[in-house]
Image 1 (cartoon, rainbow, N blue to C red):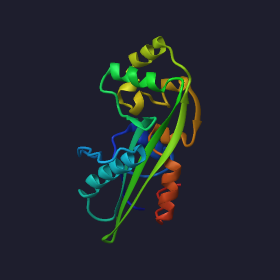
Image 2: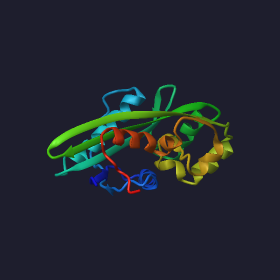
Image 3: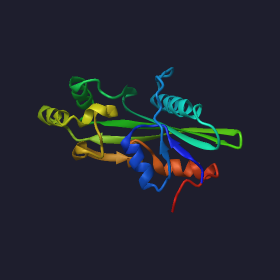
Length: 195
């Protein structure tokens, strides 16, 4: 079985890979993110590649590195992780009562017997929020849950009560489209499962 490394410190991505039955180690990328594009789909692909490559270049031997990056976008404008509670509230105001898109880019860097391969892709999921009052926004921000999440919410957490509709892959919104990831690995001839 191939040695697989997840180039992310995200506990959500770890949990998704574990639930999918994929054996892996964690080695978070430490590099500084450099964004040279503005389209959300291109941004997440670019950042996932940077994360994967930074870890890949530190390894030797046969290895598969998985890099991922997730952003929330409203009308093409990217909402990253809020820097403070006030920014989290602004982000939540911009998505409440409306739809937005969640993009996750994934890069797979594979080395086997000196041969290197790369696959980069993204998945987009549309999410619709119910309207939120100022009091609800404040209560949610007070939980501190929004502060380390793109778009200032975690669909798998307390914010789930505000989600009216999802069109696409739920796991993509959590942070990793594991079904698409598994299909890409199969196409590469890699069996990542332990079942």
